[in-house]
Length: 66
Image (tube, rainbow, N blue to C red):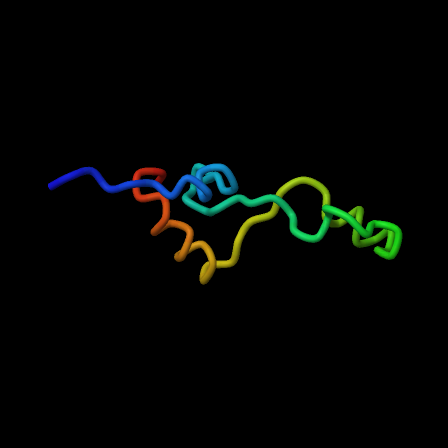
């Protein structure tokens, strides 16, 4: 059986926690920050954990990162 390939875009955008959850950068912060509220900018700092439904999809892209 040949090795399974990891999606290159996924390994650049997602990382796994020690418990197996998927960590991702917060969306919506590239441009247009003037119209965003201060609360949104504050809450969107750092990274976030994906929901279980989204994490299941991402885990298929990274078969060896579990």
